[in-house]
Image (cartoon, rainbow, N blue to C red; front, side, top):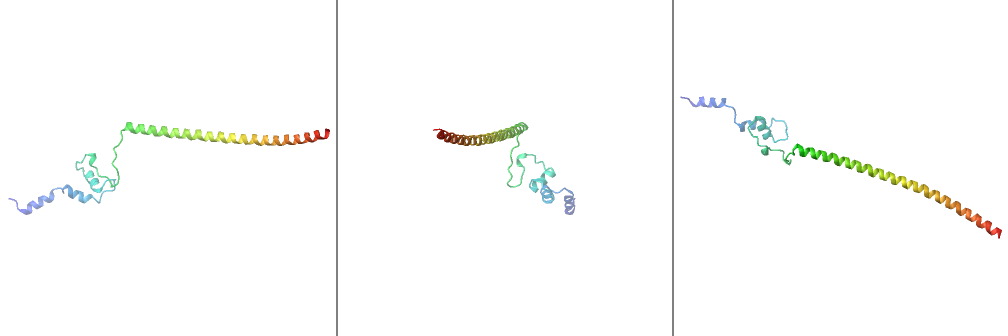
Length: 135
């Protein structure tokens, strides 16, 4: 028969329980974005494979990952939106440049007409004086 001292020796030969392993490695695992207990359980391979039970840092949302088809469509849509925005900005800048050119041309035309108008008024005044002298 066995005595109690033999049983205690055989217990020390058994691997520690999971809860002991968890307690031992909670503070020894590097930060993985998971709570230390979860990182430890994962590294020990405790058989927790259900992805819905992963513990994350407090405040972080667990979002469902989109399928690659949805991601590809989203990326393509973002690229199209960027291209459309770039094209719109270019059209807008061209329109503004065209308007500025038009303003400049109209200002030059206005200045030229004002000068011509002044010259014609002077001519009118001289001709009126000459006409008065001839009477």
